[in-house]
Amino acid sequence: SQGNGSSDESIFKTPTIKFTKLFINGEFVDSVSGKTFETIDPRNGEVIARIAEGDKEDIDVAVKAARHAFDHGPWPRLPGVARARIMHKFADLIEENVEELAALDTVDAGKLFSAGKALDIPHVASLLRYYAGAADKIHGEVLKMSRELQGYTLLEPIGVVGHIIPWNFPSTIFFMKVAPALAAGCTMIVKPAEQTPLSALYYAHLSKLAGIPDGVINVVTGFGPTAGAALSCHMDVDKVSFTGSTEVGHKVMKAAAESNLKQVSLELGGKSPLLIFDDADVDKAAELALLGVLYNKGEICVASSRVFVQEGIYDELVKKLIEKAKNCVIGDPFDSKTQLGPQVDKQQFEKILSYIEHGKREGATLLTGGKPSRNKGYFLQPTIFSDVKEDMLIAKDEIFGPVMSLMKFKTIDEAIKCANNTRYGLAAGIVTKNLDVANTVSRSIRAGIIWINCYFAFDNDCPYGGYKMSGFGRDFGIEALHKFLQVKSVVTPIYNSPW
Ligand code: ADP
Image 1 (spheres, rainbow, N blue to C red):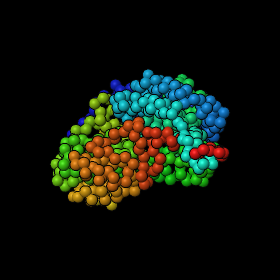
Image 2 (image 1 turned 180 degrees about the vertical axis):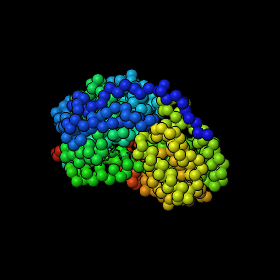
Image 3 (image 1 turned 90 degrees about the vertical axis):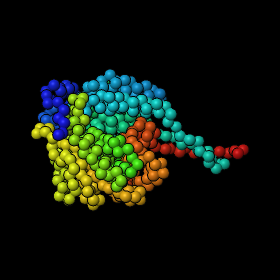
Image 4 (image 1 turned 30 degrees about the vertical axis):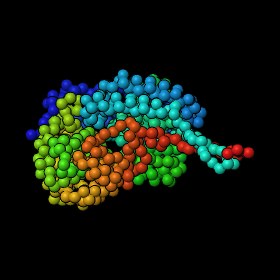
C-alpha cells in the first residue's frame, strides 16, 4: 500500500512568519489599497498568513523606485567587484538562515524540507556567488572595422527589470532571475506567485542587510492579472523575465508588445520525453523515470511526463515502475522520510485529478495511483498510465503533477518522431549505453536541454530554456547574464591608420 509518512503532523511546526508586506525602496509597506490576501498551507488547507496585496498602484511606486535607483543610484555605477562583494554578503546571509528559508518554502509550497535545506537554499546562495564572479568580467569587444573606422562595444545593463515568478521553485527561480540581473547592474521589481510569497519577502529583508541599495530589489506580492499584468505593460520597465505557463506567456508578450516593446524572455511549460532503450539497466531506468515525474511532486516544468520505452524491456520496466511507485512515501514534507508532499494548492490538486479522469475516459490503462492519498490537504498518489496514445490529452497537456504517461516504441526513428510530437521543447532524457544512439537522438530532439543517462542534472554554468512553445531566452550560465545586458557600439573615424 502507499506509505503514509508520519501520522503525527503536529510535531512539524509552521515557521514564524516575519515579513508580510510589500518591499519597496528598501522599506516594508502596506499596499496602497490596504488589501491583503491569504497564503495557504497545502498540508491542511489552513491559512498561514495574510500578505499585502499589491496592484497597479503599488507596481507604479515600485517601478518609480527602481527607475530612480537605476538612473541616479549607485548600483549600476559601482565597479563590478563592489557589486560582487555585496552579492557574496547576500549569499552569506542566506547560508546563515538556510533552515528558516527552507521551512518557508515547505509550508508555502509543500516542498520537501530536507531537499530545501540540503539543496535548494544552499543552491541559491551558490547562484549569487556564481554571478558575483561574473560581475567584474562584463566587457565588450574591440571591433575589426574598415581602415577608416575604429570601434568597440560596451555591455550596459538593460535597466529596470520585472521578474514574474511561479510557485513551484519560489527560491530557485527568484535567484535564477535576480542574481544575473544584479551582476549586470540592473534594478528590479519581483512579482512572486500569489501561492508562495513568503520566502521572496524574506530575501528582500536579507538584501537590505547585505547592503543592496534601496530601490534595487523591490518585491510586490499580489496576483497575476493585476500586479503581474501591471508590470508587463508598464511603460517604464525595460525588460520582463517571466517563468510560468505558456498561456500566461502569451499575455506577457502581448502586454510588452502593446506597451513599450520591452524585451521579454519566457520560460514556459513542457511535456518532456524520456526515452529508454532496450540496452538500459532496467532498475536504474525505472528510478530515473520515477524521479523525472515525482520530483517536487511533478510540479516542475522539465518533468519527464512522457516516458517512451523500447519494446524489448517494456514489460520488465513497467513491473519495476509499479513496484517503486507503490513504495513511495507520501506525507508531511517536514518529515525527512517523506518523498512526496502535497500539491501546491486546491486548484492544482483538482486540475491533476481531472486530467487523471480524462486519461481513464480516453482509454489509457491506469497501472497505479490515480487518487488522493489522504482525506486532508492536497496529497496525491504517484500515478502511472500505460497504453497512452499520442493524441490523448494526458500525452499532450502539461499536467504539473505526479502523473506518468507510458508509451512503447520499436525503432529509434519512431522514438524521435514521437518525442518531437509536442508543441513544447524544454527538456528530454535518453537512457542507453549506446553512444551512437545517444548522439543521434540528442541532436534530433528539439528541446533546450538533453540529459543522457541522468535527469534534472542542472548546474549554475549550464544554460537551459525552451524551444518551440516552451519559450525563449536561457536561464543559468553566462547566457542568463546576457539577458540583462545590452550592446552599445561606439565608433570613431580614424585618420592615417598604417594598417
Ligand atoms: P502556473 O500555471 O505555474 O500557476 P502562471 O503562469 O499562472 O503559472 O503563473 C506564473 C506567474 O505569472 C505568477 O506569478 C502569476 O501571478 C503570474 N501571472 C498570472 N497571470 C498573469 C498575467 N496576466 N500577467 C502577468 N503575470 C501573470
